[in-house]
Image: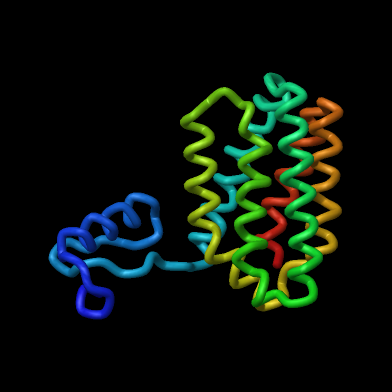
Length: 180
């Protein structure tokens, strides 16, 4: 990496150590670093944990969220739904924007939960699941119309302060990746 991109060995070691702490690369003693595995077991573990953490964060956010939180959720959903429509036409061209809009939407859902640690952990799990979502998008395994519809229902339930329905719908949407 140093020869290809330039920079110091120390800088690359620090960057790789940070990526390892985020679960994106694996550090092997005396053997260096490698890209983290992407097995079905990894996907299931990340997805189940994401569903638990995000639904808990959503429950707390519904309890503590105010009008500003509602507005941020609606705005993030609007952006995400528009990018779903654009990605429907050309998945590869819009994959990165689509994924980032998804990250921002899911972050908005939990943003009023009043737990910085939960927010940080939710973001970490979302980041770790990116490689799986990106592959599913490009391979056409994500029904973007259904995704938009399902998350719209989550937003409606959250805004209505129906935490039971909102959590159930969000959990089903996140866990749906396991049936693709």
